Image (cartoon, rainbow, N blue to C red; front, side):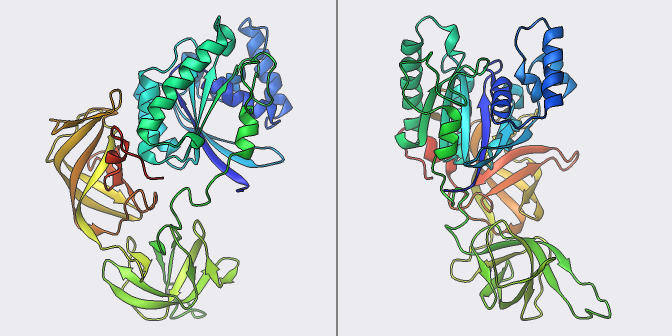
Amino acid sequence: MSDLLRLATAGSVDDGKSTLVGRLLYDTKSVLADQIDAVTRASVDKGLATPDLSLLVDGLRAEREQGITIDVAYRYFATPARSFVLADTPGHVQYTRNTVSGASTAQLVILLVDARKGVIEQTRRHAAVMALLGVPKLVLAVNKIDLVDDPAAVFDTIRAEFRELTTTLGWAAEDIQEIPVSALHGDNVASRSDKTPFYNGPSLIEHLESVPVDADSFGRHRVGLRFPVQYVIRPRTAEHPDYRGYAGQVAAGVVAKGDEVVVLPSGTRTTVERIDTPDGELSSAQPGRSVTLVLADDVDVSRGDVIAAVADAPEPIDSFDATVCWLGDKPLRAGARLLLKHGTRTTQAIVGALIERFDEQNLAADPSPESLSLNDIGRISVRVADPIVADDYRLNRHTGSFLLIDPAGGNTLAAGLVGDALTAVEVGAPAAR
């Protein structure tokens, strides 16, 4: 079992995400006493009888004033069994782009619904986004279960509807856990509550501690070495007159001294002579490790190039189909000229055809749309000026993702997935995980 779980929250406005995250921090003793005292005083000033734990996490003034989460904030907490990094994401439809960002590295997502409202439009939208992002595990937290008259019947109805939705989106039953909770009172959060006798499953924290997490959740071992070059190091000092190293982070696979590698997109082959770090030389480096590779031959390598395993090196591509979540305020239309950022390479790009738009409410495809509007999910064709070295997103989340950027203002306009990720969440099609 992994000792670290990366998770995110999602759900609609007022479903209680901030209160739930505050409860997780409070119940795992991950907040300082003076923070609790400040929250207690602020809650008393608001006329509340119990501390408003959402104040622990809604840190921006606009968030406190509006009572909603706007930006993604990362929280860290731990139990004796496991450590956690939690991306607390917004629920308002206006900030779906932030939810995409926060969930992009999650191994598990807690999707909240209000027991009084059940599965709503935003629930279906977020579930579809999580399916596209390839999130391996989902928890449906049916919050405010204490506020409905027949909690057992309400919970069963919501669970059945959610199971139908997630099955259609491609999740297996064992990847989904539904839990009735009251974030305000702590029912079924840290420990199981006697107020929900109809539920005999784990509490939320018990599930988070025990859920098996595939070490390959990001697809880092489904392909060979992928090492996007971030920086070329040439100190040219008296001590190191001829040193040339290539710094970056191992995005997939493993690199070891003596490995034969290929530099892409040029296709030049060489071997790894050394693996340097600030703490000394390594014999090998795993995914996620930042290192400097020294190659045996004097080859032409620049920022944006990818050093890859010879056995399964991807072909550099200059045109491809991709699934995108459009995050721009102005609609996307065919022919748009944008910048595409993939790994450490940024290049000019032209959007060709808009192939289809995904209707996440009806789980259907709308072919050849005229445009993609804010928060729309669709499949498009893209052509780039400089070839990129990409894998299908379903094989590797790091080398299969990219951003589309406004060349004028530098704003991120879309999050993209190389390949046909959209087809994996259409009606009846099992998603690859």
